[in-house]
Image (cartoon, rainbow, N blue to C red; front, side, top):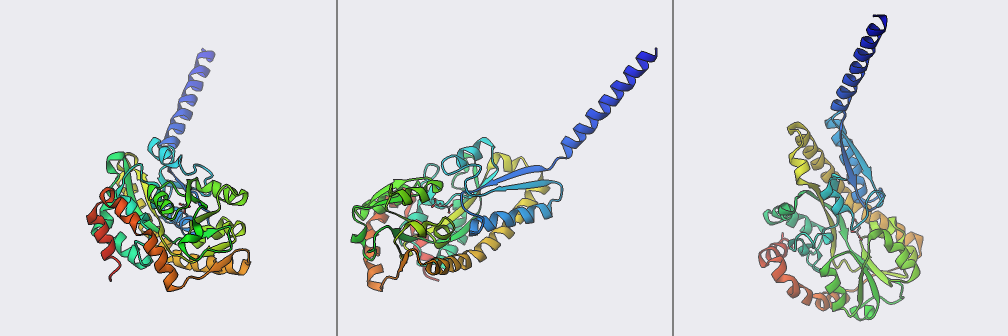
Length: 334
Ligand code: LMR
């Protein structure tokens, strides 16, 4: 009898423990993994940290945002697959990395498409730009926001980098974009698609001669230490689309989705405000470091790059859509 009572007590105890465990499991916060490939002291790195801060403040105990920088969790090539498999919930690839999913976003890679970041910002905010956030809907990808980095600068391991003919025959690392591939082919150079995490070593060992990136990426990855010249070409943009898995997003409780959306709006404003500051700061730091020469270009030099690269637009017009190109061109006029 005594034995039976103690067994019942043990069983009750066990079920209480299991009940508590179940309650604990139930109350566990929703984990939102946000993975990216750049350093924390970049516009995207800062935006991701701001999103964590705002989301956790808005939804205390309900969400936990885990940020993974520098390709720690997933690098290029793997992160999109991981998002679709549900292994990560938010990523923010550069707009150059979507051409397997939609051709429309190739608009952002066309050389000299946007006169400056203000024009790019106007296009992203326009009805056409906002429509593009949904351009991968059928693939299960939802665009939450655009985040700025900045205009790209061309760098190489040669002393001379002033005119288009200076890159003839050189090997350039590119992001996984067919437009960027065409851009370098147009110049008679040899493009090579490489993941961001492999660029430093490729430049250092001479696997490639040059690359293109905004100042913030060049500085934070120390590319200026393994390049001889960085020309201020501003020949293209490098911005991001922050994306999520639409199935996951739609399945979130209403209040959590609203809280995350608000946090994303705050993080977007923060990252976009910081982007220009960080790029200016990093250009100065690169100049101070004195490892790579910063080459300024005359108006005539820039015009030569512009006209050398213009044929790339025609190659992609049908894939992108003339309506989108026209809207982007219009964003250059205020
Ligand atoms: C690159 O691969 O050069 C960039 O897209 C990296 C980044 O995310 O800024």
